[in-house]
Image (tube, helix red, strand yellow):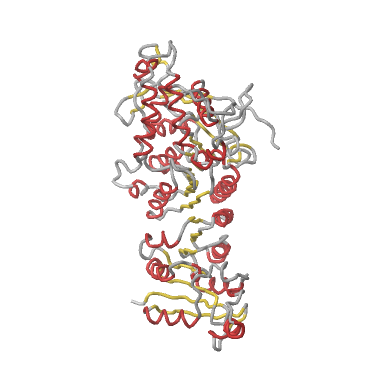
Length: 377
Length: 195
């Protein structure tokens, strides 16, 4: 077994006024700080860099341990020495998205204009804006071309956006459990989450940073979200109708079932690590995501990405971003004559499978990267 | 290397674009990449085999060829290979028709169910032989839902106006030249849609 290894989050600040980042909405944002972590060593041609993009509630801490932490980064089963994204071979970068609350500039950051947290004065951001900000970081790190961009769910959306916004900066791409656009059902679940937060009196139109935050609303948002990450089968296996610390029904509205208790726990623990306003901004970014927007069609969107090698991965029981939406991506890539491999992994874990099915993903991702890297060496 | 793979190799031009329907573990495409520097792609429905193909560096699509083949544009490939797969698909006619549209040449190989041992087995025992196509399947396990003979295939090509460019008949590794529908266990064809 490899040893535990320690990482530290680093910060890069750019887009100082008057050179703010122009957002898709037309608004300006700056200065911007990105929290990021790196793993492994950049080779002398700077050709082994892999950018990993995180999902809705993720952060820059993809692997390894922070000093004093008991739990490793969110994709530690996939990133590290000898793992799928092998940090003995590759230089791995992961940054927190703008709009986030894990060190990058977001609604909980201090607005330089007022000296107070942005709250709702923070501009609405999009997936494209997130990627534009990451490009500054990649420039700063001196990397001309990324060996690979990879990520699941919203991370997969950023992967796709990278291949369309900056195709010349990307050699290969691994979008996992994702879609080229958020569809009605996905928007609907996000809206329920946002309404839960905004109906919490503590939300106070986003101005709560010196008061009690809207934890009840955020917890409910997370509960709804969490259901969409599981599957009927995995919930049945994990909880069934088992009762929580009781032999009989309570005939009241306290917690009866294990599944209720689990969701309460997930909701509550989320409030201790996530900002409600960030949840609003990031889900909105996901809802606005439509890669074809401005190109006419998905096929047109990929027309400058023909040199990029793709590995598209989906999971059989993922009903939030189902295999059919991955296949839509594959069709558009194939129609452009792009080299694309598609793998639909059999799993009962639902959308969460991209975080859990490490063995099969390791097998295919490590092979895919090996051949991409060999081609340029 | 397997004799049928060597025959397929010799049929394929250097640097061509090849699509292998039912590519399995990617062995044939990897071989053709090495020998002929082809730009290859496979379609395979079995996930584990797809992973094995990826491990060989093969580009592969996991899915049902009958679903995706109709969506491919005309003449997108130089060759489509249907290696011992045709008898396993639900709709062989759909697969052949679209393959002939999508590729300039189609290479088809299949186990010959007209082989004398099959005939004798059915004649003497009145049962479906368990080892058709070289595998020990019972009638209820076999994936061969559309068994065909060399004569069946050649008749089909004639009726549909499909041109047979080359034909090879094998019994194991041996070439068969006389009465192939009786003596060959495998037929390999290169066909094209005559216009």
